[in-house]
Length: 189
Image (tube, rainbow, N blue to C red; front, side):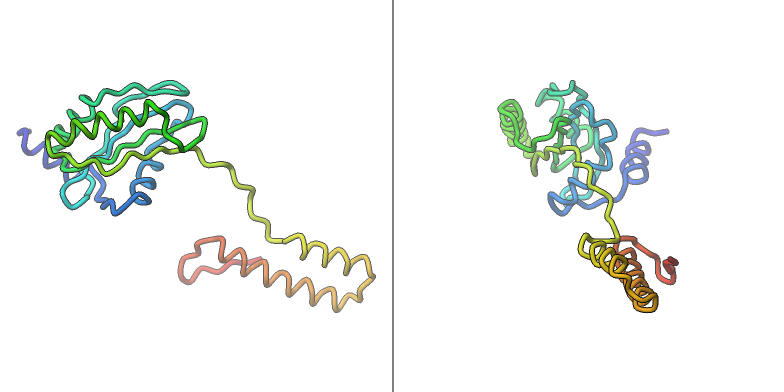
């Protein structure tokens, strides 16, 4: 295979067609790439002039609290992709979005080097692990208390059935909002 054929194949067929329009798009892209959140990783996303993704590369894998990367490695990788712009990211496995002094220094050095070759650095994103969210419950505390009161008050069965039917309809509506159902799909309770 000729070199230019390899470059075209790699650039246009193996790289996902993603356009990065801002921090949210870049963050979503990087979150999809980070599988191991136990150590720090430094990754770049190479973009063309119109901010279409050309490729991405993990430049360094570090320890639980640091990653070592050289500005020369970042600029070299950008040159290999023939990138017009870069978005850089690294993760903080222990949490905390605030960049360390070393992070700020590295970013300044990379920006200085990139300016010399007319390479645009959009930003450096720090990814932190998401805090686990409790699963959504279909019953709020008020609804649970209301049903408990109805049961404790020896409410007639007909009104209790009406209340439960109304509550089930509300639960179904909440569940349909929480789930992404395809058109025509129904939720059966």
